[in-house]
Length: 285
Image (cartoon, rainbow, N blue to C red; front, side, top):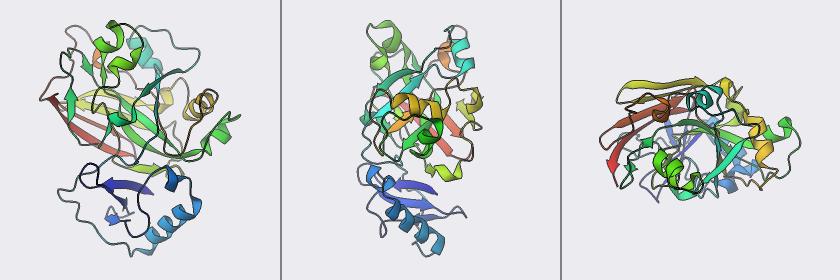
């Protein structure tokens, strides 16, 4: 299923994109798309049955904002340097264990919402990423099979980053990762049963119409199953938590001088095969 949330920010309602590409209202079936729903097999069964019935009300998608596909996200866990080609372009050694950092849940916005360039920023960068959405409480998972059984689905994430704040301002990466609007998510949460192989997904990103990133999750150093298993050794993952799994080569930081960092007025578009497309216009904060 392709689950999404539509409407003005803070007042989104649950919806579903059916197999014909028609937007359907789920408000009469479930109150929202969140961790509580994703952990409830019976409720998901009702959603699936309603979708298959073809009787859900049709929503007019024209002019309707699409919000983040998951409400009330507890935490956004991020994996850094998780693609061989991205590690190479930044001059970093491929990590021997996943590099883990966090983004605050309030950085998450809709897939087409405005991204704000922070005040004093000179190195705002782009990163298309596969996001994992957790569907079952996960702690100390032992196998890849067990890890994948805890995944509710997948989504497109844009891990916007300010490289000067991240690298040159002391401390950890958090300063460059947690600026307002720095995690567009969606348009859809695609349930795991519709993603046959999360390690065979193409990722692309364009800036002002120019293709900048063109990669595949096959190039991940630590695949989806290992990321979930590994992270569960250090923290409990709850339904509705999100894991951003890293970005392929092609970010501004990895390009020759003068590096083409983002500015107000730029337009970024990104997509992942089968998971949908995003578009953001950048403005000054």
